[in-house]
Amino acid sequence: MAVQYVNADTIEFLFEFTLDEIYVCDINTRLQVEHPIIELFTGVDLVEWQLRIAAGEPLPIINQKDVPCIGHAIEARICAENTRKGFIPAVGKVWHHSPPVQPNVGSVPVSHGNRSNAVKTKGECIARVDTGLQTNDVLTVHYDPMISKLIV
Image (cartoon, rainbow, N blue to C red; front, side, top):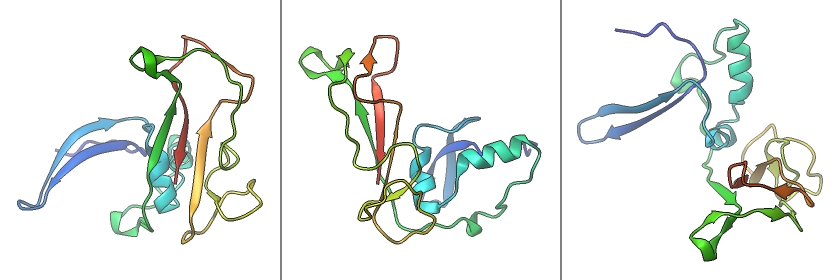
């Protein structure tokens, strides 16, 4: 039975190579925190897809074989945690915050001096930083300790 549902969601699954079987583990009707990894190695803006689909537009790519897969990516989550107290969330003033690229602008070439433009092509080492943090901000107990993500 097919579900009559269209959106750019996150589906987690396992693939059993020896049996050529796919097992669905989880389907979320939202993008997960890892979505920048997919955006980085496909060049697809998943947030834009969700907005366009919500506006009634069709999916820009229908067949999986048409999704570009160029390279690979990894995401590091930067958390404000107190290691001496069992990694509980740390609170207080942020004295210094200096991401390797300008945050929240998309994927940026690591080797280029101009860090303000998003990359439209692949094939070079690029990085992305997603954060809402700035120097002199105050971290409180009312928020998640994950303060930033570095995707390369």
